[in-house]
Amino acid sequence: MERIEAIKTIVESLKIELVICNIGFPSRELYQVKDSSTNFYMLGSMGMASSIGLGLAMAQKRKVVVFDGDGSVLMNLGSLVTIYNQKPENLILVVLDNECYGSTGSQCTYASTVDLSKVADAVGFQEKFFFSDDIDFQPVLNAEGPVFVHVKVKPGNADVPVIPMKPDEIKERFIKEVQEK
Amino acid sequence: MESSQAVYEALKEVGINFIVSLPCVNLGKVMELVECDPEIIHVPVTREEEGFGICAGAYLGGKKPAILMQNSGLGNSVNVLASLYELYHLPILMVMSHRGTEGEFMNAQVPMGKATPRVLEALEIPYYNPKTPEDAFEVIKNAWNQAQSNGTPVGILLDISYW
Ligand SMILES: Cc1ncc(C[n+]2csc(CCOP(=O)(O)OP(=O)(O)O)c2C)c(N)n1
Ligand SMILES: [Mg+2]
Image (cartoon, rainbow over all chains, first blue to last red):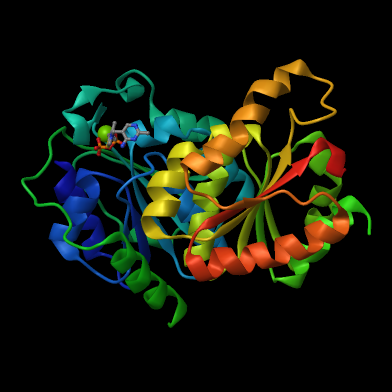
C-alpha cells in the first residue's frame, strides 16, 4: 500500500471529522484525493502536525484526525508525551510510516530500526492500531482517544501537483468550517 | 500591582483562555495563577516549538492563545514562527522572561539573551519591553489586540529587573 492509498481509504470513512495534514506530499496527495473545508494543509513547520492536532482537539469538540509522517514524528517525539498526558478523547494520530523522508527523496529515517508502535506503547497510549495491508478505520473512529494509528506504507509519492490554495485561504476556509458549525 | 499578578491580570482582561508553558524561574508565579484558573486551559509542553504548534491548533479551534516561556525557547521555535505563524498569519501572545539582561547572575544566559531582540526582529515579530507592572498590564492588553488584528505573534520581553 502506498501512502496515497492509505490516505484515500481513511478519508473515505470520514464524515465531519477535522483533518490536519503533514507538510509535503501527504498534503498534496490528500488535496488530490479529496479536497474539503475540513482539511488543514501544512505547507511548513515540519513536525508540528500532531501538536496542531492536539491544540485543535482541546479547543473544540469535533473529532480531529492528524496525518503525520515517521520523519516528522521523530522530529517532535515529545509531542507523544504531551498528547498522552492531556488525553484528548477526540484526537486520532495517524502515522503514515514509509520509513523514510518521502517528500525529500525517500532518504531513510530511523523508523526502520525503531518501531514507532513500541514508542507509543512505552509512552502509555491505550488505544493503538497497526495496519500494513488493509485499513479498517471504523474501529479507530469508534475508539476513545487519544488513538495512535501506525500505518506502514511503501515509500514513494504520487504524481500530484502542488496545492493551488494560498495559506490564508487554507486557514480561513478551515476556521469557517470549525467555528461556524 | 505585583509583577506576576500584573501579567496574569492582563491575560485575563483580554480573554486569553489557552496557555502553553515551559518554566523559567521568573515565570513560576504566573504559571501557578494560570494553572489554578478554571477558565484557562493550561498545557505544559516538552519544548516551546511544540507549544507554538499546539497554540496554532487551539486558535484554529476558536481559542485565544498565549505562551509563557524563557527567551531561550524563542531559539527552539524559529522555524514554527516563520513557516506556520508568519505563513498563515496566526496570532499568539508570547510572554517571555528575558534572561541575560541587566542583573543576570548566570553568564550562560547572556548569549541567547543578547540574540533575543535580533531574532525577533529577523522574524519581524513586534515586541515590547515593559519595565513596571503597571506598564506591563497596559502593554500586554494592547499586544493581544495587535496580534489578533494583524494576524501575527507579538512578544513581551520581561527583563530580570522587571520581576
Ligand atoms: C525543519 C525542516 N527540516 C527539513 C525539512 C524538509 N522536509 C520537508 S518534508 C520532509 C520529509 C518528512 O518526512 P515524513 O514526516 O516521514 O513524511 P513523508 O514525506 O515521508 O510522508 C523533509 C525532511 C523541512 N521542511 N523542515
Ligand atoms: Mg516518511
